[in-house]
Each structure stands twice: as C-alpha cells, then as structure tokens.
Amino acid sequence: MTKALFSVPHITCEPIKSYKPGSSEKLEVQKEYDLMMKKVINLPMIINGKKITSSKKTPVSPPHNHKHIVAYCHYGSQKEIKQAISACMVNKDSWRNTPWEHRCAIFLKAADLLSGPYRQKINAATMINQSKNIFQAEIDAACELIDFLKFNVKFLTEIYQKQPESSNGIWNRMEYRPLEGFVYAITPFNFTSIAANLCLAPVLMGNTVIWKPSDSQTYSAKIIMDLLKEAGLPDGVINMVHCKPEDANKIIFQHPDFGGIHFTGSTKVFQSIWKEIGKNITKYKSYPRIVGETGGKDFIIAHKSADVDEVTTAIIRGGFEYQGQKCSAASRIYLPKSQWKKIEKKLISELKTIKVGDPKDFTNFVNAVIHNQSFEKLKSAILKAKKDNNAKIIFGGGCDKSIGYFIEPTIILTTDPNYDTMKRELFGPIVTIYLYKDENFEKTLKIIDTTSEYALTGSIFAKNRNIIIQASKILENAAGNFYINDKPTGAVVSQQPFGGSRGSGTNDKAGSYLNLLRWVSPRTIKETFVPPKNYRYPFLKQEK
Ligand code: NAD
Image (cartoon, rainbow, N blue to C red; front, side, top):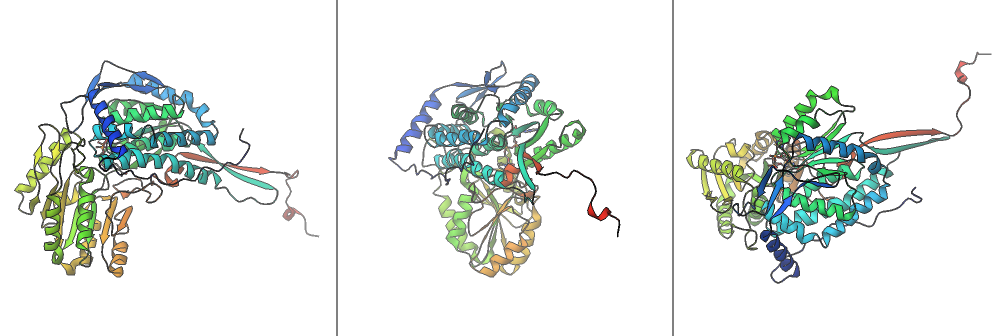
C-alpha cells in the first residue's frame, strides 16, 4: 500500500505554558474548571466504541472537596471483561494491518488536539480528579502526554528502520509484528500521561488493549478516550473497563490470548500479578510480556561542598510537588551535619511560605492527597513519628480531612538511617532527613544503596567532581534515574527515559524506544534470489 519511505515531522518537546496572572491560558483553564465543577457527568466503560453503563455506579469527587460530586463512574463485572477481550481480538487484524503512517498520523493528530482544543479540558480534569495544581497538571496531562504521543512516533520509525545486514544474493529483513494476543494496561492515579501511555505505547505498535484505569483517575481517563476518538483511533483498539481488579484478573490472566501486561502502580500489586501470570503460564499461546514500573523510596544526598539554596530547593520541589505523590518524589534525605544549621534555617523559612489547599486557588503549592486511605496511612506515619524516640517532626504534621484530604508538608528528622519512613514508600508530603557525620560520606552512600528495596530515582548534590564520580559509582544500582545537582523528579520524555530496577520495576524506560520494543515480536525474513538447485557442497567431492 505504502509507496514511499515517509519521514515523520520534526519533533520537539511541548513548551510549558506559564499560567501567570492575567494570561489567556489561566483564564481558559479556570473557565473549564468551573464548568466541570458545576456539572455531574457519567463515566461509562467504553468497549468496541460503545458506552456501557451499569447499575453499579460510584460517585467521583475531587480529593480537595470530597463531598462534592462531579461524576458517577459505571462499574462492570466479568461480563464486560469478556466483552473487552472479544473487542480486542475482533479488531486486532484491522488495526495491525493499518499502515504505520496512518497509525502515526492518528497519534500526531491527538497530540495537536491536546496541545490546542483539549489542553484545558485535560488540565482541568486532572486538577479536579487528581488534585493537581495547574503547573503539575500542565507538565503531566498536557505536556508529557503530548511528548509521549509525538516522540513514540519518532521511536517507532527508528525501530522500523533498524534492519539486519544482507549478503550477496540475499535480502534480510526484519518486521516488527505486534504481539499475537491482546495487551492489558493497568494504570495508576498519579499521572494522566502515564495512564494514557500505558495503553498508547502498545497501541502504536499495532496491538489492541484493555484499559483498567485507577478508580481515582476515571474522570481524566474519559477525556483521554474522547481525545483519541476525535483523533480517529478506531473503535475497539482501546477498550476501557471499570471493575474490581480481581474480577479482571480472574478472566484476563487465564485467557490463552493474553499477550502482555503494561502496569504502573505499587510493587506489591505488580508482584501479585507476576505470580498470577506465572501460575497460568501453560495456558497462554505465547509467553506474555510483563512490563511494570512500580514504587520508589527516592533519595537526595548532599555533600558538604553542595550549595545550600540548591539543596533546599530540590528537597522542597522534589519532596512536596504534587504532595509527594510521584513515584520519583524525594522522600529520604541525607545531609552533612556541618551544613545542617544553614539548610534547616533556609528549609523551614521556605516551607513556611507554602500554601496548602484547593487547586482552584493558584497560589496553593500543595493540594490534597488522593483519597481517604492515603490520608489515613500518612496520618498514622505522622502520629508514629510523634511518639518514636528516634524521630522528631521539625515541620508540619498537620492533617485535616474536613473538606479535602489535606496533609501539611511534613519533615521528620531521624537519628536512625533505617527508620521506618527512610525505608517505606509513603507516597505523600512527608520527607525524612538523616544527618551524617561529614567524614562518613562514603559509608552513607553504602547505606543509601542498601536501605530500601527500591531503585527508582536519586540525586547527589556536590561541587567536587571526585565526589560526584564516587557517588555515581557506589550508587550505580540504587537508581534507574540518577541526577547530579538536580531534584530527582520531573523526567522528560525523550530526555530522561524513565524507570528503575530492583523492587521498582522492569526498567523498560517509558519515553524511549526501549519501551516500544516490548510490544513487538520481530519476524526475521530471509529472501534468497537464486536458490541452489543441488544439495552437494564442494567439500563433499572426492580428492583427485
Ligand atoms: P496501586 O498499586 O494501588 O494501583 C495501580 C493500579 O493497579 C490501579 O489501577 C489499581 O486499581 C490496580 N490494582 C490494585 N490492586 C490490583 C490487583 N490485585 N490486581 C490488579 N490490579 C490491581 O497504585 P496507585 O496508588 O494507583 O499508584 C501509586 C503507586 O504507583 C506508587 O507505588 C508509585 O510509586 C507507583 N508509580 C510508579 C511509577 C513508575 O514509573 N515507577 C509511576 C507512577 C506511579
């Protein structure tokens, strides 16, 4: 069909809008936010392009205003899961046979729609549904998702161009087939862009997908489905279900056509999924692809040569942006005793200026945590720290859920590098600091490497190059994304491909070609132009 080797348009990262007072983008997003807050909409499942409602409905409320209802989400059961699998299998051939440039064109169109008419819809939905301030919504739901949509197109062409060597009389080719079965995407609440990309990466490579969004991201998930429909993604390529995870697991992980899982969420859940797949391994037609990015206990270590203001800013931005609910959020901090008084003074005076509240008020830096369960978990960690002899709360500690699930940015100072909150992922605005003796810098690096089960992100702050080299070496396996003199959050698609190893996941690097490779099963083709007509090799001849 295709009669040219097309090149894709030049691709660059989406510029982040400022939303400064008086800007048109600020007025637009505020208008969209108010409209959404006034309405109550339905969030149906979408299977084979059809909206499926049910009598099992649950209210959806903003975490910062949990008595206010903005939607009802419709839940299905095993019946809808079976329908979603059928839809994936029925639509598989037409989607995998859609020429690559047309698959890419749908993605590029979706990116342009998101950059234009859908930008403030997805931003407002993410602010309301996940309690993000406008900047956090913009860098996630708008910019990062636009970057995923566009850069994945570029990565696809780079993969397709990767071809084997050929020799005389032979043309070797490699084609990047989609997987034979369907892909199951289970997605987290905390990034609208990650949720979308967990479906879109396999889809771009020609697969059909069942998508089960987090119960705490269903509102912004609907906007993604609207966007993809408008961009021309055919019905049945992504089938979105809302259900109890166990209901889906029972059907999907037993199905012979289960081709792969694209997961982001907590480590425990991923490990339980892996076990389930292992138990059923003989039932599948192919070995399923298992891709999962999971938890983190991300660190910052400052050397005595580090700049106090830079370290303080990294702790605040890295630890408290989006209420510390980023898998990459800095939550364990190692500071040299000699610098502590200066850092403490700056840190506390800066934290005092931070406002906590509703994202509608743009002056709030910290908003609500995602749900009651998270609120209670964080509150109990704070209460425990108040009681423990080896921990002291030096800032924050306040919790209030009368209107929304608000937790103050909280700093725990501990004398024990193995204190509970130095090891356990809390996923909230709680940062724990441990002070080390300056002469124990190397020993502290070794402690960092062995304290937690995770290895997602981490930062070293130092001016001295030899120190940077030493930290990079000792911490080689402690983080999949390692930062030098920068906070450990805010990875950009195409610039810092993202993922960690150990308990943090399979490290398949979202935002790079490496992730797309997991969604194809290459076929090698050898074509011989003039095949031999006789089996006898020259060595078989008799000596004369
Ligand atoms: P979660 O594990 O609670 O839920 C993630 C998804 O798994 C949701 O859709 C949920 O419904 C589903 N789920 C829950 N139990 C399940 C089960 N038994 N079987 C199948 N699916 C199940 O995580 P969350 O609270 O949505 O997100 C926070 C977690 O995600 C944190 O641990 C964070 O570190 C991690 N995360 C990691 C990355 C990364 O790239 N490494 C990115 C974002 C979030």
